[in-house]
Every structure is written in structure tokens, then in C-alpha cells.
Image (cartoon, rainbow, N blue to C red; front, side, top):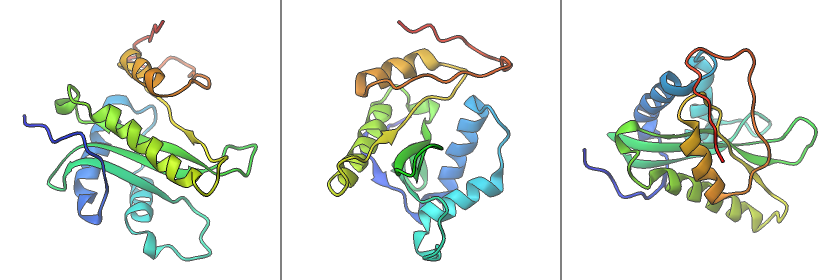
Length: 174
């Protein structure tokens, strides 16, 4: 299959159907929890149509970067603004970072990470303390993902789950 250049653009409303295709594929590959379509739709609505959010609404906001055309998205990253439980400092967190299996031999994964870093740097122009938290929550194919992330950013911990999920593939990364 022909691959688009690894250039990330901001998602637009016309990407919504293809975003759903990527979300469902990602969920079938790596999700730890059941898919709640109304919750995903709410996030999509808030990110793709921010003008519909009332000014006093304190719910999630964010951005989605995509690679490909609205007719065929090849990769996406959704970044949401939020805070860790012990602080009121706002940070950018990834909710989705996914490359369609047909395009994994590309540079799309690196481009998505670079896009998230660029978005963070833009915010840092007005808030020098702003940070991004991005990670891997998966039980499959984690070794290569961890190595990729380590080449792009510094590590700040790990994630563990109990009990062991069905289909778990251990990640022994050195």
C-alpha cells in the first residue's frame, strides 16, 4: 500500500470517520479496558469542534494530529490537557498514539512524537514550565515502542497491571 509522507496535520471534522476507524483498530489491538463509544465521541466532539464547548465548561480539551487524507488516515495522536492528581499544573497527555499496521514501516510514529513535542514547545513559549506526559499502555509489541520513545524523550517511570491480562506479551527492554 502507498504510504503518505510522514507529515502530521491538525485533524479536521472531516477526519472523524477515519479517526473512529483508527480508534477501533487500536482498541482491538491493545486496549486494556472495554470501549465506551459515547465517551470517545465526547472527546472527539470536544477536540474537533471546540467552538461548541461552553466557556464555563472545564472538561477536556485537546488536539489531534493525523497523517493521511480524510478518506484514509494512516496514523493519529490525540493530546489532551489535564493535570496529575496531586497538582493543578496543566500538562499535555496522550490519549491515543497509533499507526495503522499497514504503515508501521514508515516514519509515522517518529513524526507523531515530533508533532507532540512541537505542540508542547508552542505552549512553552507562554509557560516555560509546561510539560507533556506521553507513554505506552499496552500488553503487546511494547519492546519496539519503548525503544522508540527512549530515543525521543527521557523516561519518567513505568506502568504495571494486575492481574495479568490475557494475551500479555512481556517486554524485556534493555
